[in-house]
Image 1 (tube, rainbow, N blue to C red):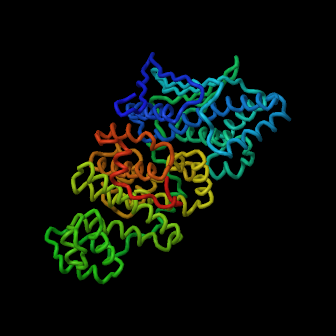
Image 2: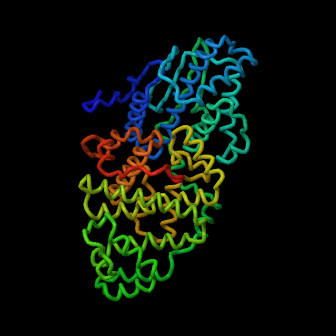
Image 3: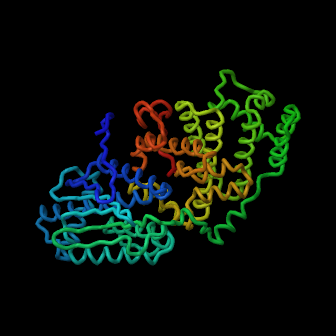
Length: 491
């Protein structure tokens, strides 16, 4: 245990694997294992694919626990798991139990989890004390074969209708994720004999994944190119700000010609980012407070919003902007709590407003598929961001960065969007902003009971070099407002 009472495991090394053996792994144990995995992935320079590999580890552990529980339930019901008729009855009992609520922590089987490093591979191994019967072996083989056939998430939902084994779709997704990351076909394997079943992920240490390569399809590139440019009046104002001697009264007169932009300038000037006790109602006063840097940020975000209007459904945009505003405000609040410089706080706020803009393309053009992905991730308590690359071949962060480039937005903003899920991989100029956005998501999900990946928030804080009293819990208590009902947009 750490001083704060958080369970910690040592990092694996060549010849010294990390092995955890238990009956039903607790949430603390699983989070501690994922925290170790995060540190290992950082050390390998693979931060960008951590969420995907962590999903794989959680999926294999969940399947192992379920397999053991299945046998326990069959024994209690007097059913023969090798009998096809009894198998269907027992599976129905298991589903009924799972639908009733979370599984308990008692079990009579063994689950052994190993994280190992060889000279060439990172190995994740999950072993449980239940040898597969023929029907299980056939289903797993079918799922792993299916993962090699499907290219996109919507193909999976069109073709796979049998959900009697909840582990099935999870394995297909895992196989597709690993293939997309560049893991060879035999990188996900299983064996079952001698009373045990073992699943293994073999990730090459020299992995060059799709996250690191430019694999935008022509269809996706055309979609991005079809998005309108930032309106001309916004572009003209941005050009005016390039001059060293800015005439603020003249600038205010130009801004007032656009009522919506005027409201946005006043809204920003009165936001918590600028922390003024008296309400500001004059455009000139607002501009003097915001300065060139702040006004540039407003023009960038406002211009992007105007460009997207009419190109995607209004309801989608409204939900997206509401979610983005929450993240942006949290990022700024965290920046103040952690003593970040003002330009970083301001940059994180602006970046926060646009960091998930790539999701608009995914949801706007693949609405049914994206909704199915969100439902799947909600059931798994997994991050949709870890899997949304399966929809169009590229994750939403990279799509958003390409959109920002399409609009000629500043490079720091482009990179903050690009690395909002992997801030330590960001270029130095964007790294601090990306950290704040990442932590804003962590706090957002932490306070709303979101997906499991942010359960390692304290490890992330340490990796970010942030010593915050109370860790993520303490940070959330200081910056997060009371949570509203769960929103439809989120990752």
